[in-house]
Length: 176
Image 1 (spheres, rainbow, N blue to C red):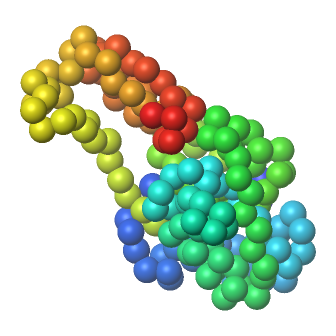
Image 2 (image 1 turned 90 degrees about the horizontal axis):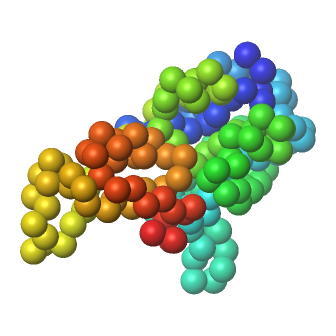
């Protein structure tokens, strides 16, 4: 397995030890890791997916995912450099050696597994249909024929399609 085929994120909120499994298949010695730049761990994130990645009021990039990756890098004796990448380009950049791994949470699909290798899950989430309290939509079946917003190229598109809903796609969470 080559480094460029490795994705450092899939979607079980766990300990840092589990998060460190992004290097499970690699030597524990940082000098032996296959990195784009020696001494530096680089990752891709959207930067727009709270609480994982977001802009703090100071303008600095922050979030749970970034803090986990920075801690992993520190424990390995590496510096850490996150890159902000648009969701629809995140795997393309990984395959083009623009960063060492993707830290942004990403659902595992058979299609994605053909292109990249996923680590053990460090965060689990699931699809949710969110409606106002007074909405007539009370079950997934009630969404039939209704408009549902999803992020383009996400694992939520096929789920919305199964509901036989009209689908509106957004490029990123803040656009929704």
